[in-house]
View 1: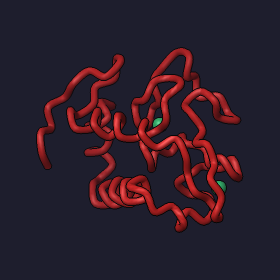
View 2 (view 1 turned 180 degrees about the vertical axis):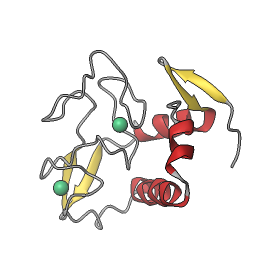
View 3 (view 1 turned 90 degrees about the vertical axis):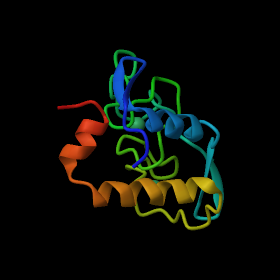
Length: 124
Ligand SMILES: [Zn+2]
Ligand SMILES: [Zn+2]
């Protein structure tokens, strides 16, 4: 893994390359689901409140009003309003880089023990 130096991102400790993931996520405002384009749900606009006004996303560290990093477990599916990472909607029509990003981060998480992920996100 490249540079794993911890940096402060709006009050959350994250590894430096995670900031690039967050910035990349902001470039993709839409998901293609079941063949239709949907505006992604920004942090703070979910059906359930995650306390976006008080703190950054506990899973991907974005601040209120930002798009989650694809594969974040807080991100809501704009179609069915379940968790975007585990809902049954068909994201296979999504051909942009975001699809690759989802898969990349998903695989990364599966490969790493949870403790590593927590360390990565600055949790204990
Ligand atoms: Zn998130
Ligand atoms: Zn869905």
